[in-house]
Image (cartoon, rainbow, N blue to C red; front, side):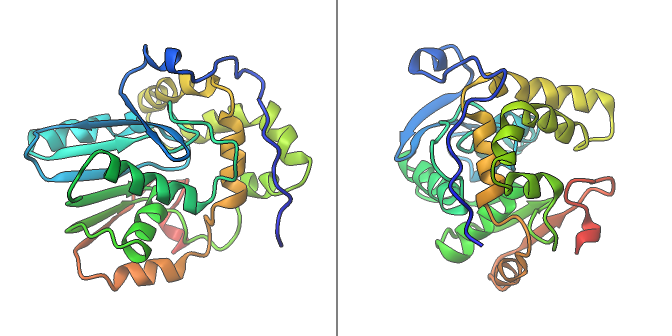
Length: 257
C-alpha cells in the first residue's frame, strides 16, 4: 500500500536551525551534496586504508569515535558521517527512503576524492545501506563488517506502525518522537554509563528543526524488514564478511534470524 506523503513539520523542542553560521561552531567538517550539507569526519593516517563507517537509524558520526581511534592506532583512515536528518547533516524536506541514503554515501565518497574504500563497517539500518552499496551500486571494498544489522525481522516494530498511520504519524512526531528516540538509545546498551554517553552524543542534534520529521519519514519509507534477499545477495559477494551481534542486543536481536 502506497502511503500518503508526510508533510514536513517542526516538532516540539526543535528551536534551532542548521544554518551555515550555526555549523561554524560545531565539531566536524561539512560538505555540500546534491540533497544538502553532509556532516562528516575523515581522519587517521593519510596513507592508511580507508574504512567507511555507515551509521544506523538515529546515530550521528560521533557514535564511531571510540572505534575510529582504535582504527587510527592500527594505521587505518576512517570516514564517518551523519546520515541526512541525523547529527548536523541536512534536514531534507523529502521522503527518507533507501535511495536518499545510498546516494548520500556515494556522493560523499566521490566529493572527497577517495579513489577507493578498502573496508566497510556498518550498523543497524546502516548495514542495509552498506549492502545496497555493494550489491546494487558496485562499491568494492576488500572486507565488510555488519554490526547488529537491521532487515531480518518479519514484522514491523511498533514505532514503524505508528509512523505509517495517517495523522497519527505527524502527531507522534511532533510531540512524542523525541522521548521515543531517547528511550530507544537507552535500550541500545546495558550499562548506565554507556546510556548517558549515547544520550549526550545525540541530544544537541535533536534540537534542530526537521529532526523528528526525518525519523518518522525514515520509518515510513525505508525498507527495514524482510530484507532476506539483500542478505543472500551480499553473501554471494567474493569478499570476507564479518557478522557481529551482541548477546544483549534488544534492538536488532540475533533471535530475529
